[in-house]
Amino acid sequence: MSENKSNNFIHNIIDKDNEEGTYGGKVYTRFPPEPNGYLHIGHAKSICLNFTTAQKYGGKTNLRYDDTNPVKEDVEYVDSIEEDVRWLGFTWEKRLWASDYFDTMYEAAVTLIKKGLAYVDDLTPEQMREYRGTLTKPGTPSPNRDQSPEEALALFERMRAGEFADGERTLRARIDMASPNINMRDPIIYRIAHTEHHNTGDKWCIYPMYDFAHPIEDAIEGITHSICTLEFEDHRPLYDWVLREVGFWPHPPKQIEFARLNLTHTVMSKRLLKALVDDGTVEGWDDPRMPTIAGLRRRGYTPESIRNFCEEIGVAKGNSTIDVAMLEHCIRDDLQNKVQARNVIEDPIKVIITNYPEDASEMCEVENNRNVPEMGTREIPFSRELYIDGADFMEVPVKKYFRLFPGNEVRFKGAYFITCNEVVKNEDGSIKELLCTYDPETRSGSGFEGRKVKGTIHFVDAKTAVPIRVRNYNYLYVEDENGENVLNPNSLEEKICYAEPSLADAQPGERFQFFRHGYYIADAKLTNDKEKVFNRIVDLKSSFKPKK
View 1 (spheres, rainbow, N blue to C red):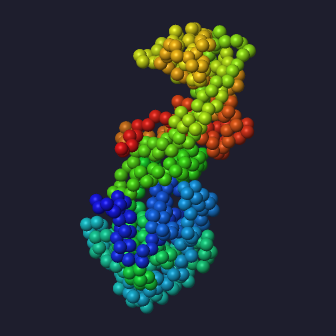
View 2: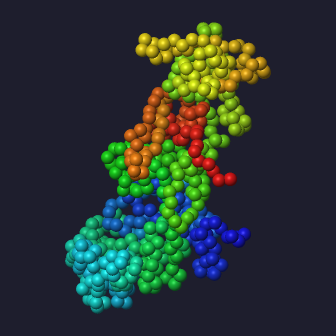
View 3: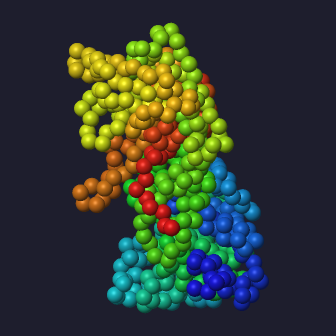
């Protein structure tokens, strides 16, 4: 690889175009979502790629809504798309609608008809599939294929006038019924749909197909590089054919395809995601288990982590599946030096310090982030009655277990050495409380340098602890015995935990590290003055090994 050559093949193509003066050094991209659902992490890759590519070359990016289908767009989806793009940190040059170009698209279709390159067909969808042929068998020409331009134009004008029913006629490009690329076997470029359009009202009852509209939209806007996902690679010859044969634009855009994003434990289909919303499997498009950008935002992911993830996975020409652990690594990496730690106790066990004065209490100093001393310290209360995590006590310890067990001594983080002396149980055999003693000479920060302990655990003061609702999210999908993605029945586990007092003031959207548990965010919808609800962003353990 030469010193100046990028490892991004799209940028290499642009570099060559700039060297050859193809577009006069201009780079203009676009992000063209269809407003029929919320954007997901796969769209985030496309957003980042289009916007950062333009930024690299001092260019611009349009946000264009693909609304060539005569369906009423949902304002909710439009608003969510724009919020997602802004949240990721990007600003579009223009906000546009594909339907604004219907007049030009009609004019382009008429041009093709007059050149003898389009005809009106009356084959049914079933007949058209039969005539199309297969990958190994060429197609059969429609009986209408030899139609004269005059006859085709007259029929097309009647289509526009509403003289035919839905599906009764289509306009097809006349290309090559024997082409090895089935997309080139006289594709439909206009169909009839007597449906009011959200933008153009009842002006039209014929609408362009996406493969015909897409290149024209790009050309009208002056897009130089139309960056698409890999499924459009076989459509590129049609993209080029339309622009070449319509002939309105002397410097037509160039379509470039890249591999779409596939993640383990995730589905990347708006249709399937919408079904999960509609049937109530999830709480909505922004359910924190969803791979939507809205879901990831509510889950607690940062825009920086998403952008870093998209940069890390790079741009490839071949499809592959990325381990979701890489996405989780990116959010851990982003948060580790940004957020403060807090003590939160899951599955609490009460600890009574029998030799500590009953009515006394004190404040213990602990660091807010051990990686960032500049974040300072905070004080947490310590008294006779405390709570510790259930995972931090074993009545019969396993080998190399260094936390609390009968007869063992550990440090309570920021406080004292504590020894467990007795386990008090309920009638059913469950643990009621642990009777312990503390060594007053071992207070953290006192300079004590006596005996050492191998275990350090955290705690909260029982009297001042704040109950919070914690939502621990697991993967929405898991693999079954056949390697297929199936819904995970345990994708959400809710529990009431006890937190140090400062979390009583947590505001929606605030992120913390719950010491030894993971990174959490105060849920933007459910957290209020009466109840604090926290979503687990990601746990602290990582199976992902970043490249060095």
